[in-house]
Length: 229
Ligand SMILES: Nc1ncnc2c1ncn2[C@@H]1O[C@H](COP(=O)(O)OP(=O)(O)OP(=O)(O)O)[C@@H](O)[C@H]1O
Image 1 (cartoon, protein in one colour):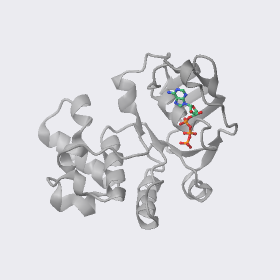
Image 2: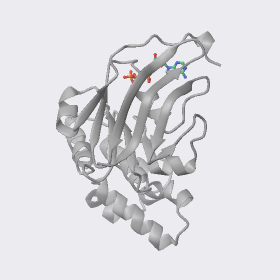
Image 3: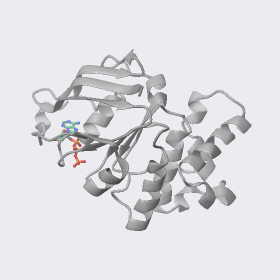
Image 4: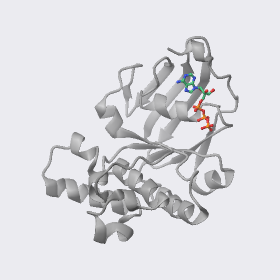
């Protein structure tokens, strides 16, 4: 299989502490990898490091390769973030319609006619498993969607970019069982098509969805507020 992301000896440090790592792993095309570990172990921080979007005051060390391109710290760009897309834990739904939300992001990376953009957005809604529920109301406010539908809308927005890798930060942690199952079905459908890194606290979910698991075993000491600028 082809590697989409490879990290070697990745560490994230604040001014005076190592918050994460060293950790090494690779995400293969078509595979789903679980990223597990106790609260505070650094799972969200790893995801942000992979798209080179660490908060100010934190630095990355070690090698990061995305599709054979080496990403030096601070050198991540729009191209990287269209290839590797981070879907945060809390779905961010913008004002505007369901279609506007699915198109957000895509509009910035693809110069194409409205028809082509719309086609890509609709395809992404299919891929995220939301199409049947929204096909007849694409122009309705996205704010009216349920929590599970919002999560899948964020997934669709990410998929519209046709990324090689998707980083999902606890996508079902705030959902009831039924919505969780629906979101899980959408994630399962990505298998074989994208490299997915799934942060999850739920071993059963990891068992259901993932081919392989990366453990961040060591809880790490938080940086003191004084250490962060
Ligand atoms: N901007 C920051 N400055 C200093 N320390 C930070 C910063 N962001 C995160 N940390 C610290 O890094 C460590 C890892 O945090 P992170 O949120 O990545 O953990 P997590 O494994 O995702 O936790 P959870 O499972 O609770 O979401 C924690 O100790 C946290 O306090």
